[in-house]
Image 1 (spheres, rainbow, N blue to C red):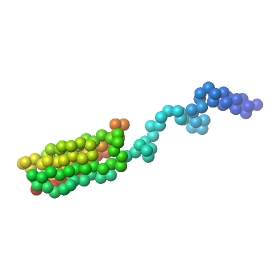
Image 2: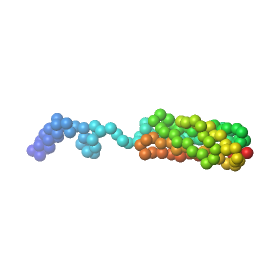
Image 3: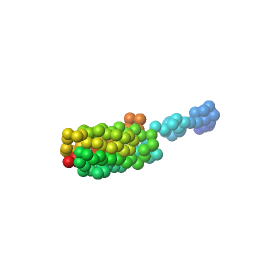
Image 4: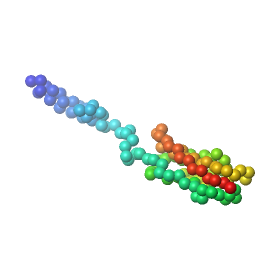
Length: 125
């Protein structure tokens, strides 16, 4: 008798719109998933400077590679010099006064709280 009542309750619950709940886990499967699975995951693959050694009169192109670039934001910074460009590459122009190591970094973020930072050094002679 209990089996029949439980079965009838499950059938009634399913017909009342509760069918979006997985009866084993209780998870509401009708909501969009916020799981950062493989389709939404990304990572920085590399950051390079070309050329990596320059004079004060030259420029270096800094390129960042990510395994997915759509929907990502790129914020570039340098310890010295000036950066021009945006997105996955910028150009470093050294200061007239200074030789040495210039560090260029890029913060990549997805707008959902996840970010990664990569840096590369450029030697200015």
